[in-house]
Image (cartoon, rainbow, N blue to C red):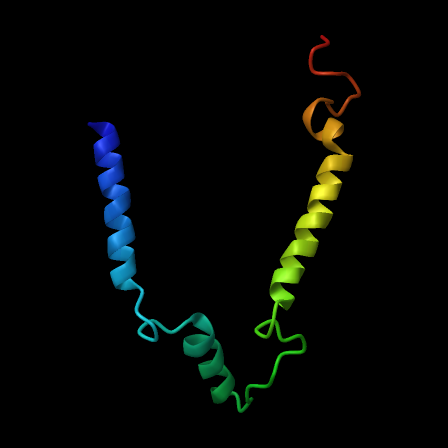
Length: 93
């Protein structure tokens, strides 16, 4: 019974989430807050220095960050998982 209830709640969240996701109905913080305050202060919007909306630049940035993080975690795996800070192993008293 609990599994059925869990599945029903999750499925209801998916269905209702699809209905709630209207295109331009909910503007983001940039449009509602940041741009409004910038207009009040006499500033205008300009293009970003690194435009990640074009092509796969944002995907490449996440790939590079994941590779660096994976390399660091793999390099220091033993220290992260098995060794404690004082130099002893977990199984030792």
